[in-house]
Amino acid sequence: MEIKNFFYDQEIEFEDLGNGIKRKIKSYSDELMVVEVHFKKGAIGSVHEHFHAQCTYVLEGEFEFEVDGVKKLVKTGDSIYMQKDVSHGAVCVKDGILLDIFTPARQDFLNK
Image (cartoon, rainbow, N blue to C red; front, side, top):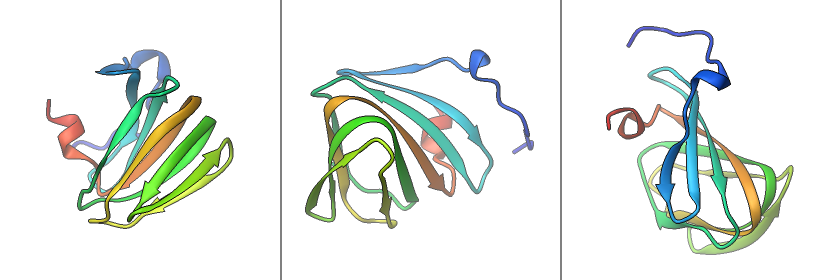
């Protein structure tokens, strides 16, 4: 992968994932990826797992997160860590925006 150092928001289009969720891949390399995900109230990020470690920072809104079977309410300024291969998902309680950081990069997001 060619290394890119600068990513300009106005040049990045949202990908509509449907059901009140859309995302922008903000920056990435093979080892790391940052993704901004917008949720409408009631939108569901289905419980899933993957081999990537993930940190999520709540930029705006409120979410009920489930990590490894444990559910917690998180709000603006809170963050969540999901180790690799652990089930996790979220329900948006109040319109919100999440910043997801993955290692390694989610090649499945890039290879559409």
